[in-house]
Length: 202
Image (tube, rainbow, N blue to C red; front, side, top):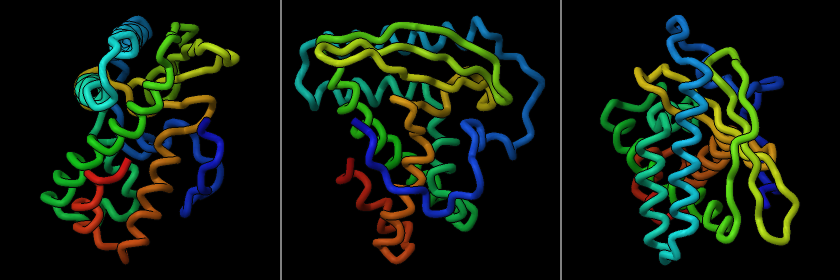
């Protein structure tokens, strides 16, 4: 499972699930609970279709990347995982990093969802949070106890997208911020090297 992650290198206090958008001015809520639920239900339907497709791993990963592009706020996820380094990056670097991050995260979590073959995801509940809605789901896998997969949904990007995910309580963005930070440290803080190497990682 996902239990052995590094501690976030720059963890400040008790970070909340919505921390990545909390510092950004938000419009008045236009997103409704029903819309957030509908987005995640469509997302789950597409994930379940890929799980049940019987395709090869490489083909499934490509499908998961298309799903990620359709349903996720890739831009805010990518910037958050860079942390303070995002502020010093050029616009060109941020665009290149976002594209590389998109492939990286799709491969990494696509393989995780591939473990669900023979299982399924089902909607459980939803509630409003500071920056949108939390949509909780249950994963049923053969030979394992059911566990939660939760998506956080916002309309900050101008359309309804999920901006974070928890699998078995593990916060994807905090985890990836630690991982990306470690990868940058290994490259002496050279973002261009990370951008070049990221397509081979995950």
